[in-house]
Image (cartoon, rainbow, N blue to C red):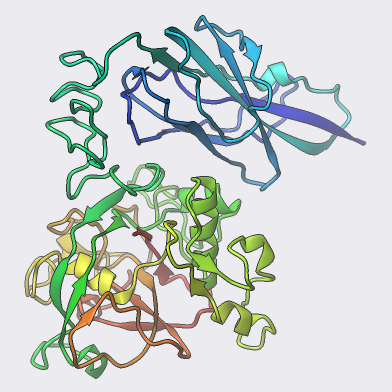
Length: 468
């Protein structure tokens, strides 16, 4: 048997035409195809930016980007090409364009098509003939139309920047509501929108949470209450974005290259186990996921460990209390001014869970099977995200399915009003919220607090992410 080196080419994405300031990216998944000799090949999973509508520009163009990952974590290379026709021929190589992003020039009018080839080199055992790249290539393209004189984006055009337009919307505006707002555009980002501002790439569905003030904790008269849920106190938070769902097994595997989850597909639930929430991670792994995803999306990572924001420099993941590098990971800090993914604080989590309510659950004071997977209906298993009733702000599974990691060290609440609290500066255990598939209703309350051992991998714990 001999090792055969081969290169798997994936020509990223879809034909794309989009408005001047489009901020979304499109998810395009391929299962591993078979090469001509019948052997499985490792193909990068690709996400392409941007999506929808014609990319019509007459000002400096927004950078086109790809987000790629592969299960085995092998290195990926990128090469961009341009062509004046939309065909299977890549066209002319763009010298120096070998990164995840490329900004098209706007010095000439007309339509240009851009191709990006994402490749990975892997070693496979076998005695068959060398496999060529053509056996696994896919065609994809981004079309960029440079306009010859408009300044606001084709008022009244179907795909450009018209008031109420299908793919973006406003006259001179940003899809995401950064400058100029959005009047009726389908992909616009008002408060509660999924793709605006720093709402991420679209790989994780984020909901914008408006800033505000709420009362954190539970009253002494609440049934099932623990003493650590008080005293109730006023908390004021700045706005942020939060994952609509728990991070899924599919998302975790794409970013991390492996899936640690114990639970498999659930009978009768299409999309499992891919859409089941990832579990059996420890708290530290959630930090690694956050920084890796931030790096893939070009955001500045939130967490710094061992004087680095790159998880490759953090050392071995601690998995016991006696691991020598556990103190190094416990000293993690949030980088000031960073805009990357992170775990919610306890205050952010409870604020988003309550969604303006002051009741025991975010649907009222009476528990029902409709709002959560718990001990009474789960069959001792996680379930596909998004099947139960969401709260008023659109978040799913805030009660049940999995307990959710939070940033804070576990400690006593303040008895004074707080602004953007981050929890104690040190401690022994971190916190978790929400309750799991194996908890009773009293442990699924909006105010319930759990402790989590940062090193332990338990089937009851998962997480969702936030962006500032």
